[in-house]
Image 1: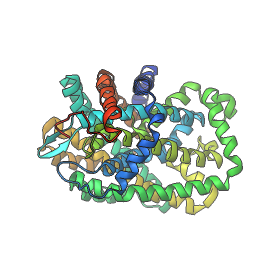
Image 2 (image 1 turned 30 degrees about the vertical axis):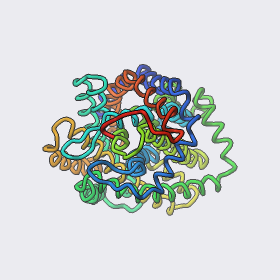
Image 3 (image 1 turned 90 degrees about the horizontal axis):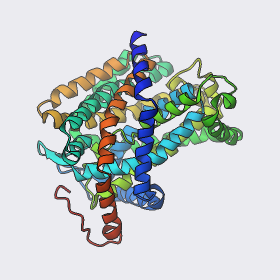
Length: 460
C-alpha cells in the first residue's frame, strides 16, 4: 500500500488543474486555429478513412505502411483496456459524470491528434533503413530541444512499452481468471508468448495483425453492447440525463451513493479519456508518421476518426452498458473490468462475463503490440537499432509481471508515467502550432481540390 500511496500523491500533483487545463487548452487552441476542423472536415475524415480501408495497393515495407494500417495500429492502441476497464474505473472513481468529461476530452482531443499526426508525418525519418517518427523527432528537429525529446522518449518507453503493457496484461489476466478461473500467471505467460511472436516481426507484422483483428473485434463488441442497451432501452434516456447532471453535481445526481466530488469526476473523466483516446499523449503519432499518404493533413484527418471511434462509439457504448444496467451502483464492491463484466452479466448471465473476458483479451493484445511499436520508435531514437533485442525482452517480461499485480497500483503508475510523457509533447505542439496551420492551409488551398500540392516534404 506504500507504493499505492506514493503514486496517488504523485498523481494528485501531475493530474492537478494545471495538467488538465494544458490538455484542454491545447485541444481548444488547435480547434480554434484549425477553424473547428473536427466538425468542418468530418466528412473528409470519414472519406479518407474508408478509402484507405478499401485501397489494397499500398504494401507495408521499410518505407512505411498504408494509411489504414497506420489507423488500425493507432486504434489498436486506443481501443483497449481504456475502453473496457478505463471507463469502468472512471465511473467507479468519478461517478457517471466522468463520462461527460471523457466526451469533452474527445471533442478537443480531435484537434490535438490532428496536429500530432501532421507533425509525425512532417518530421519522420529513416532509422536503420526503416521509416520511423513521432514526438521525439518533432520535438528535437522542430522545436529544437534535445533534452525534451529525450525526456519524452524515455517516458513513452516506460509509460506504454513497459508499465502500460503491464496494465494491459493485468486487465486480461483479471478478466480471464474471473470468467474461466485460469491463474493470472498462466494467462500472462501465454500472452507474452503470443505478443513475442508478433513483435519479433516489427511494424510490418504488427500492422498486418492489427489491420485484420481491429475491425473484427470492434464489430463484435459493438453488436454485443448495443444488444445490452436495447434490452435496457427504458433506462437509456435516464442514463444520459444522469451523465450530464452528475458531471456538474455528482453528489446530488448520485444521491451520495459513491460519495464522489466534482474534482474527482473531472479528473478521472479527463484522465481516463486521455488513456483511452491518447490525444495529447504523443503515442499514436508513431503509427501515423509512417503512413504512405499524399499529404500530411490526410493522415491528420484519419487520426481524427480514431478519436471519434474510440471515445464517442466504443467508450460511450461501454459506459451505457454499465449505467443502463445499474452495474455502476456496485462500484464500491467491484472495480476495473469486473464492473464492465457485471453490466453484461445483468443482461446475458455468465455468457456476458465470458464474452468480456474474450473481448478484453483481443482488445488488450492488440494494444500491447501497438504500444510495443510506439516504444520501439523511441528506442531507435535513443539508441538506434542495437537496443531493440533488450527492449523486446523487457516488454515480454513486463507482460508476465503485470498479470500478477493489483489493479489500482498499476493504474496509478500508468497515470503517472502518462503525465510525464504528455508534458514535453504538449510543449512541442503549442510551439509548432503555426506549422500545423500552414500545412493544413496548404491542404485546403491546393490538395483538397485535386490540384498538385505546393507543400514539400522530402521524407514523404
